[in-house]
Image 1 (cartoon, rainbow, N blue to C red):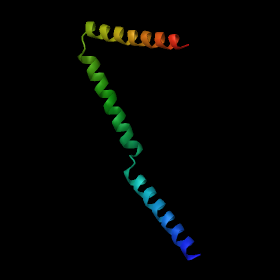
Image 2: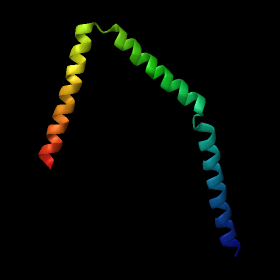
Image 3: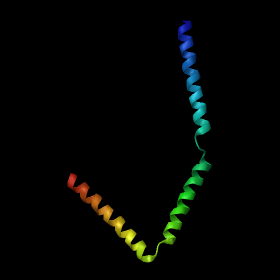
Length: 77
């Protein structure tokens, strides 16, 4: 009986420690929003830097990637 209670207390203590650590380390909603906003700002800056010709080439590259993906998917079916 004592051995079972001792094992149960270890399991509960370890679980509580892991839970507490995850709560402390896990980022809150503010940090996630800040991270996403910084990423969006970075992408916007990169798009502003591109000239019109570079932007058109980028769009063509995206279209080609999607076409290649569609072709590969159709070949698999």
